[in-house]
Image (tube, rainbow, N blue to C red; front, side):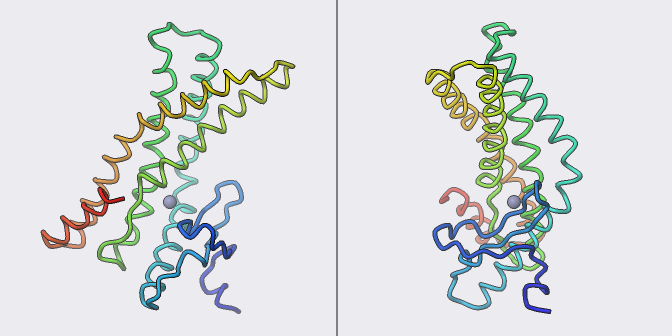
Length: 218
Ligand SMILES: [Zn+2]
């Protein structure tokens, strides 16, 4: 048995060029991955604390994701239908962008609620755990939606159509729009998580303020 078995992490990496990517859980492979280069924190206690938080976080994804997956798949279907409708002009002009932003917000919220759960697991061993619902959920939401657009482009290409540059520009502009639209709900959910942790860990007024200021400073 090695230290790796004790930590129960499926794959360890050392990616110094991506120090912010401390860990990941991949729903496709069901594996938990940890990037050891993300723990260059100097102080040994801090390293252990962050490592435990990261592993707990990713394992919480592994536990929560199967519960969330049926709804996640359903919303992805809704988004795919929205994309098809949008591009093939089945909807009224005035409703067009809503066809995409409404399901996008649902996907973002679902992903953010999963992150809310996985980040709050760290509150048992850290007073003010690092919480980044906005960053994590934003990245995963945009990735999920971009993949759906890519599927459409691929199907389009397979039919022998040429992908015009205009089409790709349009998608990138829509992605920008979606990013702006989901920012507020993600922000609200992160605030909810910080409030929950602050209350649960009985932060003083000063600590509570600092904890919220961290969010603004990001
Ligand atoms: Zn996460």
